[in-house]
Length: 316
Image 1 (cartoon, one colour):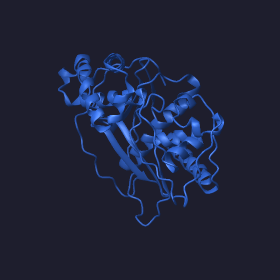
Image 2: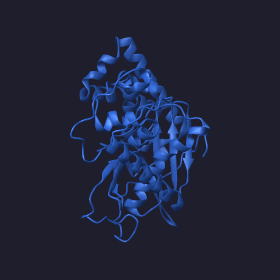
Image 3: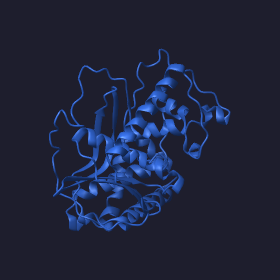
């Protein structure tokens, strides 16, 4: 892993996903195998950090109000997705900055409640400027004029042999044809700051989760995983191999077994940690003197995780 800005590098032009041999790692699963549940990287991270937060989000499905951080992440991700609709020469910082207000208007139309986050025009203008500053951080890390992503905001889904469905959204997938075959690079943007060395492994778990999905779907192990932190203009990278991804799959299966035990027992424990200040449910958390609501009855047979792009500065 590294935390120095990478040089811009070329990727292939738009490409379709090839068919996969049923015998390959990405082959289709037996349609008769029962589905035992579903899991995304964000909700997996929730359970690892605090099982009670996972419960509030997945089992109770408690509503969460919009926040400046999450809304800024949504706007920045939208701009970075739409930036690649422009011709390469037009992918400048000025062009990206100009896309911020249209992205904000689109978010406001989808979620009118976000408008109440700001006391007035000055507060909104300062917030929009903070989103533009994050885009400057992106341009310090790579030159989008030299890139041709094969996919953006790519939804990926695969059911493991156990019946566990994995799914999520990849911010960007770069693809190139090399003498050794197809080379894939998975890129994810974070609008917060990079973690300390002690947390880098946890941060890269999301990327290995995506790499596992792509390997199982396409039969190709991504050559590189890049995680950009726009808040402090640094990045992490990894080059996974088959052993890495098999270990990731075992970890996911073990994590799901722990989720299933909590679901069956009703024991969703609060785990106070550095992310508590970002949590909307402190009033219901025993660690803060609150009382969780009664568990839904009857309990859902399968904890369902509705995957969504991870954009919040705390969630990633």
